[in-house]
Length: 154
Image (cartoon, rainbow, N blue to C red; front, side, top):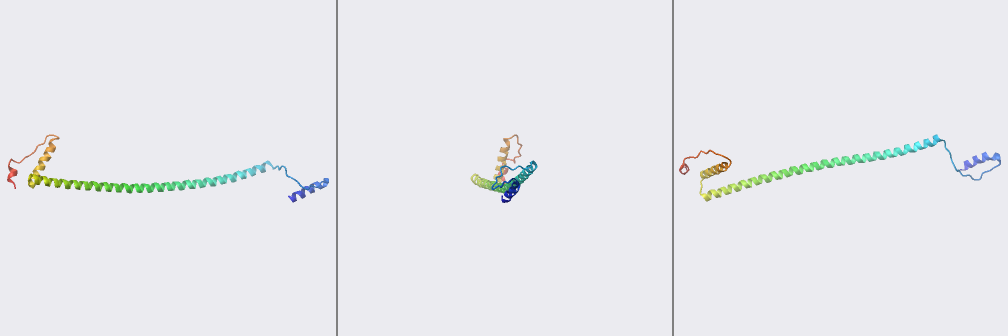
């Protein structure tokens, strides 16, 4: 400010005037200078916007990576759970089959004892029951040993 005041007084000394203070009321710049300042400011703002946009894209990419990792983890957990469920179901089916077969064997043994059948008689009994079951679906041709043949064999 002092340098400017000195310059003003050097200009005004020839007219016999001395300035003690001054106030800048208006500064006019060439239009091209103002345009270049505006362009610099716009460029700086665009640079900042681009940086922020780049940061946003990095966050979006990080989210997508985390999402993919989570989906993969969920798929692995689901596959493991599904395999475990199938193992449990298969084990239960197997155990149920064994229990059913065991119970059938026990009940047939009780039936054999109750009826007083020999193993050969039980075999014939099963054949008859099988034929009876097939007869409901249509015609069945059966070969039967002669009467009394079962009584002759031990």
